Each structure stands twice: as structure tokens, then as C-alpha cells.
Amino acid sequence: MLVIVGYLVVCGSVFGGFAMAGGHLAALFQPLELLMIGGGAAGAFFVGNNGKSIKATLKALPTVLKGSRYTKALYMELMTLLFEILSKVRKEGLMSIEGDIENPEQSPIFSKYPGILADHHIVEFMTDYLRLMVSGNMDAFQIENLMDNEIETHHAEGEVPVHCVAKLGDGLPAFGIVAAVMGVVHTMESVGLPPSELGMLIAHALVGTFLGILLAYGFVGPLSALLEQKLHESSKMYQCVKVTLLASLNGYAPALAVEFGRKVLFSTERPSFSELEEHIKSSKSK
Image 1 (cartoon, rainbow, N blue to C red):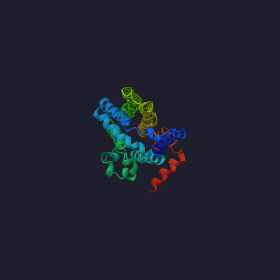
Image 2 (image 1 turned 90 degrees about the vertical axis):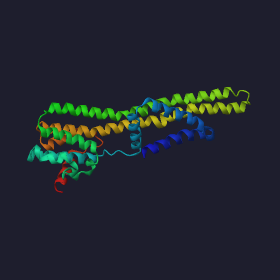
Image 3 (image 1 turned 60 degrees about the vertical axis):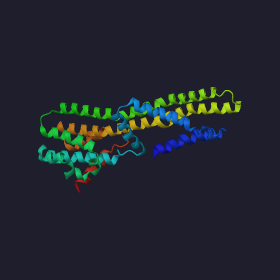
Image 4 (image 1 turned 180 degrees about the horizontal axis):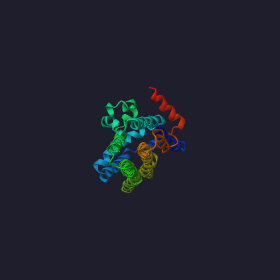
């Protein structure tokens, strides 16, 4: 929703200011300029990226229209799930969660937290390292190193759409110049026309530069920044799981291990100690 609002503000400010200054909005409607700029940028996008990057970018773009799913409620659900699993381990031993981590969809623990269960990436991350903990063949340092490498890989994959959109935005002003130059070439070959008509041709050519810059900095460029913010938000889920499991592996009680995980969250979504404690207590009573 904020993306649409932002685009409306950009258009209203730019085109509204132009109209208030006495400009004619019809002069800015140049479909052929848009064809040259948009078509050129799209072609360069396909040339400069492989199939995997293109697919990842097209998949990521619709998410910019959705609000963030990483809310305080979701994080409390995650930490309550971790607390319940670690409490079961502490009471019944590591082998007691083997059934839960092998089939989380059928697990009575995981099924209580549909918000987490719906994210198969975070469920897979969690169950994989719980499985390693159950095996007992790796120490905390080895698991931490493996976690860091996997989170780094996740981040690198998430940056692919960010870089693709950013490069697309960076190229739009240049394609605007290309469209403008093509318009100037057309004007120069029409020097025999009356001055009034030549003025219109020059104006049409300059619209290409205007559109390229506007599309780059008003529309496409901000999308890459938004995708990057969403990537950082998604990484926090993995960091929370990592810190909590490592704290448990180092011998801390479940309540304290979850507190470690709470501390790595962004302050805007981080629940307070009492909020998390109350949420855990209420989940126990269910």
C-alpha cells in the first residue's frame, strides 16, 4: 500500500507542479519514448541476468506491494515454539523431539504455530540444526559456523533481485538519453519544418530524458531499497533461531536461551521480556 501511495505522491508532485507552472500535460505523453526506454531497459535486463536471477527478480517484485509479515506477533510465535521444543528436550532428552523434527507438519508442537509452519524455509532451517543436535556429533562451534554459512547463502540469494532491480534503475537515465538523442536526430532531419513544429519535436525529444530520470529515481530505484529492507527483515528470523539454539547447546535453560534470541531482533518488532513471558505462559495453558 505504501508503494502505491508513494508513487501517487511522486506523480502528483512532478506532474502537478508542471501543470501549475503552466505546462501542458499532453506534451509529456510520449508512448514511443516510453517504448524506447522501457523496451531497451527490459532487453538489457534479460541480457545482463541469467534465468535464475530473472526468475528470482520476477518472484520478488510482487512482494513489494505487501506489508511486512515479520511482526512482533510472529516473532513471539517463533520464540514460544523454540521454548516449547527446548523445554521438551530438557525434560525428556534430545531423542524425544526426533518425531517432531522429522515430520513438523504432523508434530503436535509445530502445528500449534501455523504462522511459523507456513514458512517452510525457517522450519527447514530449524529442524535441520535440531537434527544435528540430536545426532550429537557436532560441537557448538561447528554448528555456529555452519549456521553462519547458511545464513550468508540465504542473504546472497536474497540480494540477487535487489542488485537486478538496482542495475535496471541505474540504466534507465541512460536509456532516457538514448531516446532523447533519437528525438534530436529526428528533429535535425526535419530542419525544413516551421519553427513551431521544430519546437514540438525538440520538446518531445527532451521528454525522453525526463522519463528516464523519473522512472529511475521515482519508481524503479526505490523498489531495490525496499527489497533490501525486506531481505534484512527475513534474515532476523534465522539469526533469532541461530542464537537461541546455540544458547541451548551451550547449556542455558530454555527461558534464557529464548531471551538470547529476543535480544537480536530489531527494536521495532522486539517484544519486551514481560510480553514474551506472558505469551509463553498463555501457550502453556492451552
